[in-house]
Image (cartoon, rainbow, N blue to C red; front, side):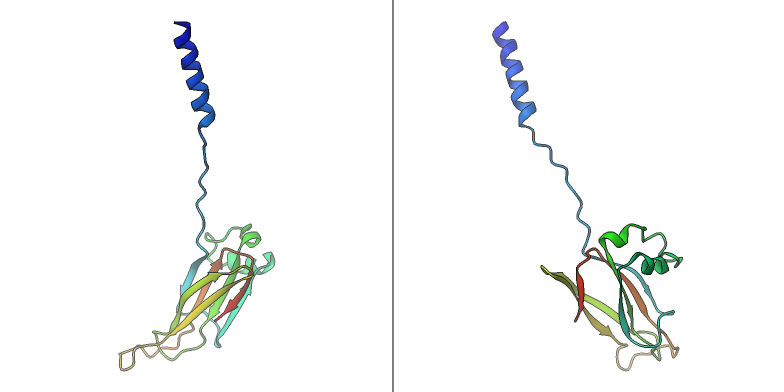
Length: 143
């Protein structure tokens, strides 16, 4: 009987020590498009990187973004404002083709979107813009 108890204790000790509990962490995607809007952007084309807390406050005041950006995001992320510029019709924009992280930087590749030639479009001036969160503090390069 004592031998059975010792065996059970030994097995319990071995199995309890042998368990290797790993805490799995959900990795954030490298980028997130926080906002895509047809109206409200600048009249000219440009890309702007926001990385400082005082710059991100501007984004946090936007009603469409305030619940998507925390005050601590500026510690681990950069934000990119992509303005397409003033366009004569609806249907213009930018497509993010890829966001690649290298050892030293982030390479953001975009492609212009234009209305299909010959398609019917609404003749209305638009100013498309995008807000993209890059979950890295590395330098951002545009292609």
